[in-house]
Image (cartoon, rainbow, N blue to C red; front, side, top):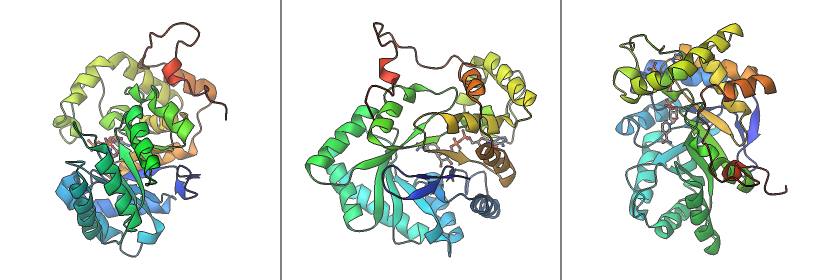
Length: 323
Ligand SMILES: NC(=O)c1ccc[n+]([C@@H]2O[C@H](COP(=O)([O-])OP(=O)(O)OC[C@H]3O[C@@H](n4cnc5c(N)ncnc54)[C@H](OP(=O)(O)O)[C@@H]3O)[C@@H](O)[C@H]2O)c1
C-alpha cells in the first residue's frame, strides 16, 4: 500500500481509504473489527465515517474499535442533515463523543443544502479548526463552483479552506470528470471517491439476467436493478475482461480508479473482511495504459460535451493551466 500526500497538508495517508458505512448495518461489530484490523494490517491508515451512518451507531462502533489505535489513523467524519453553523458545531461535538476522541483529522460537510448560508457555514467550520477539534475541513458532493465559492469566502476572511471533496466516481458514474477533477488538480484539493464498485455491481455481486441475491444491498436499493439492466452489455464485457486477466471484478474497478488522474484515494466500503481482500489486491495491480483505455471506454459513460471549437472537452481538460 503506497502513501500519498493529502492535498497540500504534508500529511501522508494511505492511497486507500476505508469506508465504514456498513459498520453496524450489514457488518456487525465483530466483522467490523475484522475489516478494520485487516485494513490496518495491510497499510491502510485513512478511515471515513459519518454522523448519519446507522444514526450514529457506526461512529460508536468505530470509537470502541479505535481505542489504542486512534493516533495511527487519519479519521474523517461528516456532518449530515444541515449546513447551519450551530448544527456544524453541535454535530462535531456529538461525533467526538461517539468516536471517543478529542479531534477529527478531516471534518466534512456531507451534502450541500438548498438556500445554505455559505459564509456562516465556512465561519463555523473555521471555528472547529481554531478550537483544535478538526485538523482539516472538507466537503462531499459539492460541484466545483461551490468549492471555489466557499474557498473564496474563506480566503477573504483568513479562514480555513476546504481541502477535500468526496464524490461518487466509478466506471459508470463519471459526471465529476467535468470540472470537479480538473479543479482538484489545479487547486490541489484531495479527491476521495465513494461508491467505487457502484454498490457492488462492479464487484460481480450481481450479473445481468440473474436474480438479485437476497443477501445484498440490491434487495433494497432500487437503483441496482435499473443500473444492471441499463449497463448489461458493458458489464458482460467488463466481467470477461477481468476473467481473462484473472482479476476479481472489484480489483479491476479499484485499479482503474487508482490510475485515474486527480483521484487521491478511493473510499472502499465492504460488508465483510472477505470482500475487502479483492479491493486490497487492486493496490498491488497497476493497469497498463492500454488496459486503462480499454476499461475506460467499456460503458460509454464519459460525459459528452457540446463545446466544439478547438477544445471539445474544455470542461474536462486538466492541461489548461501550466504547472
Ligand atoms: N460522502 C458521501 O455522500 C458518501 C456516500 C456513500 C458512501 N460513502 C462512503 O464510501 C464508502 C463506500 O461506498 P459504497 O459502500 O457505496 O461503495 P461500493 O464499493 O460501491 O459498494 C460496496 C458494496 O459492494 C459490495 N462489495 C464490495 N466488495 C465486494 C466483493 N469483493 N465481492 C462482492 N461484493 C462486494 C458489497 O455489497 P453487499 O453489502 O450487498 O454485499 C458492499 O457493501 C462508504 O463506506 C462510505 O464511507 C460516502
